[in-house]
Image 1 (cartoon, rainbow, N blue to C red):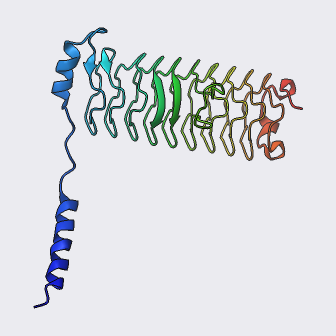
Image 2 (image 1 turned 45 degrees about the vertical axis):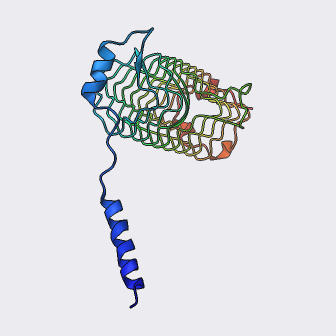
Image 3 (image 1 turned 180 degrees about the vertical axis):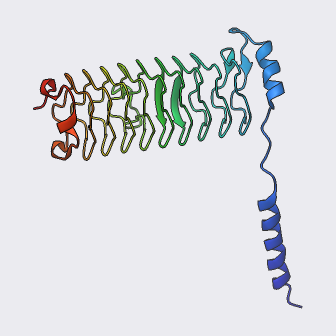
Length: 262
């Protein structure tokens, strides 16, 4: 008797059964998290370290007395939540919804946030070294953020924030530090970049149309095919930029006569 066809069918059936199993549930539900938060304080924070909190609706919650270090927050809804001042290093936040959330002065290091929604979020004074490719940061407040490379602390090679294809339209980046950031094809149309530090950043094909770059430092930046149509360039530094010949829209920019080129 040839048993191999039956074994093959059994293996196929097992594979289909395993594939169709429901995804494992999160470690806690919203009610349990609310209960933990209600009794937490700075001395005894709600312990959410390394917890699986995927796909949960946690919108509007105050996490200031919580420890979320290393938690898995993929696809969860934390819109309008309070995460101010938290250490969120090594959390997992791909496709998370943080629209309208308060992340001021928060630390996020070594985190994947691809496709995250941070529109209208408060990120002032935060420190990010994370992957934010394709993230939505439209109209977010990034004033005084420190998202640049710290060259004194690079034990594993150059680690920097990545904002390729990110939507930063209408965002406030006043005095933001984004040195050496990866921002290829980023949409910065209508953004406020007054005093922003973007030196040595990769801004290839970035859209600066209608943006205000007054006093911004783009020294050494990669600007191939970047679009500056109707942007404000009063006192903007372009010293040592790469691919200057391929700038677009400079003829319609304002304050170009005071911009600094080499």
